[in-house]
Amino acid sequence: MFAAGPIITMLGDTMVPEATEHAGRLVGLFIVAGFTLAFLLSHAA
Image (cartoon, rainbow, N blue to C red; front, side):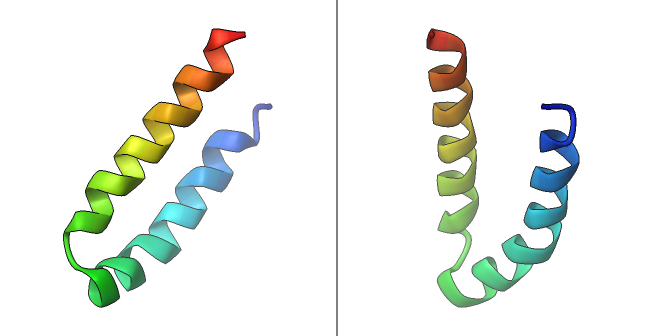
């Protein structure tokens, strides 16, 4: 569980610039929405 934060940071650091290059700035909104949904679902149980 403690490694999740660094792994998410590493993936975001490497994948977000490439994603915004191909899909535009809307990618940021979807990333935030996805992390928010994952956070809410993990704390709902």
